[in-house]
Length: 338
Picture 1 (cartoon, rainbow, N blue to C red):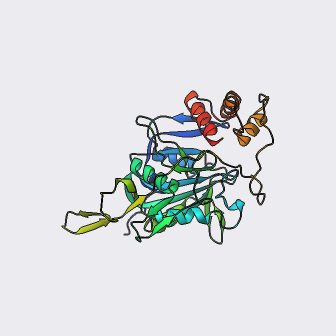
Picture 2 (tube, one colour):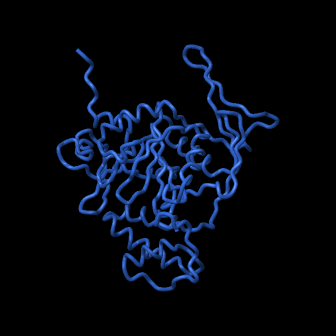
Picture 3 (cartoon, rainbow, N blue to C red):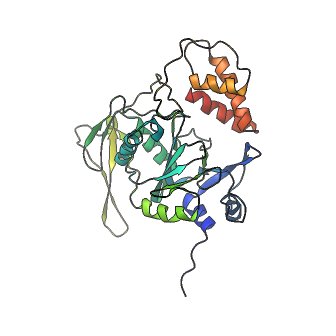
């Protein structure tokens, strides 16, 4: 008698290991549910209980077995709609971090992309978040994987911000929650890109691809090169396991990074490339949600726009969420993306 295969919803729950609290959608409005996600609840959201898949966003736990890059279709220069090679530059940077094999998920019918990198074993969530962020933002990496030095100059310097490119898990303030990311196969066009088949929305497919990809990934810890001991060349960590065997742990030594404020908008229309800055700033308060969305798309173009953009962000956030904490989080995300 063969070994019984793990139920799919239980596999999702074990591998993704969501933390406390999750986000659902009801009649187009998103709201938080407190507590731990259960297998029976997850079965419903995956559409395994007989109904249609339903929106579900999860937060990571203290240990994570995944890294996700959220690539916005409308504004990210890394989205494939920007042209040939747009995604490859980002993928090449991920390889230096140790992330070699991703699962490409279409987040919804809007066309955004989530790159899920499965990990072979859980790692500390916050440490992974900080290491990935540092490695993406730096202008140079002395790699612990191949002993090469990688130098990144414009336009290969990566920008992390809401509505462009985001990393999950995110680095967060002490005592705050991690941001929620949509779980794969939870409806509304969410599915896995499979070579030769297009977007597949059957959740069982995810398990096989996940287990195959995980063996190729790791998160190489990022440390500032200024922290390296004086007069010491490049080095990695060496640890001894319970059997007395030595294990080498690679380290990426990175150059300090700076936050850039000058950004150009990217057209949402395939092939149109970068948008020009508008000739003059808008001084008119948004009268509708469409006006608000336009103001947020244009962003800051001069002084005296803070209140207008805050109002625009609040108008847009209220169309998505009903709870005050979620509205506040969305306002913050929208303003950061400007």
